[in-house]
Every structure is written in C-alpha cells, then in structure tokens.
Length: 219
Image (cartoon, rainbow, N blue to C red; front, side, top):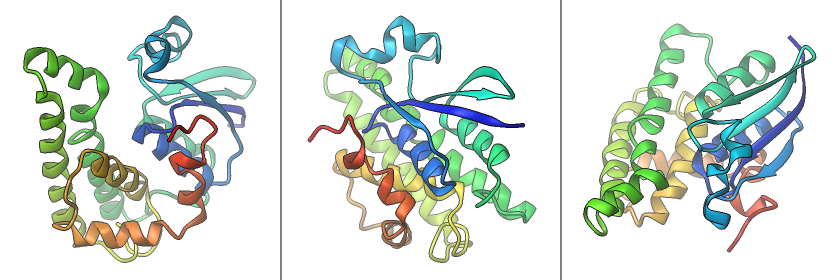
C-alpha cells in the first residue's frame, strides 16, 4: 500500500497531536501541517470542516492518499499504528510479543488513563458541575497515570521505555510530561520517567515535534 500527500490536522499544544508529529519525524515522513486552533473562533475543531474529518471534534486527524484514494484517519493511536504499517522502519513496536504488548499497555496508560480526563471538553463539563473541579480532576488522573507508568516501566526501561530504542510508548510519555507540567504536577516521584524524557529530549525527532517549533505556536 502506497501513501502520498499526508496532511496532519493538529494543534501545537495538543499532546495527542504531539505524539503523531514525533512519529512522523522519527520515521522521516514528510507531511503538510494544518493548524486547528482549539480555542480561537469558538474552537476550530468544532466547525464543520474539521468535524467531517473527525466526528469526535478532536485533533489530530491525518488526511492522506492511499493507493490513489483519499482517506482520513483520526485518533493518535490509530494514526501511529497506520504509520507503522505504511512506514515500518524505523519501528515503533518491538518484534518480541511481550514487549510489543507492554508497549501498547504503556501507550494506553496515557491514552486511556490520563488523556480523556485532561481534554478541554470534559474539563469544561466538570467545571459546569463544580467550578474549578475540572483542573483538579485532570491533576488527579495525571498523578494516577504517571505513577502507574513509573511502576510498570521499571521492568523494561533502558534509555527509553522499552530498552534503549524509541517505541510508541515514548511518543505518548514525552508529551504527557510536558502537559503534566502545565497542570503543575510535581514530577519528582517519577525518576524513571524523567530519565527517559531526558534521553528523548536529545533526539532530533522529539526536538522537531516540540510545540514551540510548530508554525501555529503561541507563547
């Protein structure tokens, strides 16, 4: 299957978008950056053009041509797994069955255990029920998820989450630590995660995908 004309609809600060940008940079796949501002204009992700690409009204969404047919895939896990199939090298999932499963487990700790609780829409809804509760809710699940990741990753960690090679798990962990700092989470209890982050910070793919390197970046 041949993929061409990749366009990533995303937002510089979105951790889910950040994951996909790292994957594209790590695999050296060229793409067009399409900014979708989550706050301006009432939230561009809520407007009809983007809703047609992702009915969940979220970022990211990857628009591409597969064997001559235009396709759109949303949700960061699905996008990264598609990229792994289309561009298998360098790999983001280990060949070993257990390590591949552990990679997916670590991915889901972030993707399912933390991400839904810190998204703008649920936080806004929680704030409607109790003023200020949305941020507290997000902070709680950041701590819970990072603690679980710290405990689980000790078995496999080297320089990265799975040994010394970058895996999909690192693509989810690294942006999440950036987000955790925005929520004023004390990261000292997670030394293994901080060590992995420090290593990833030296890698060109992680540097290129950073929020402050994106065309829609705002201070």
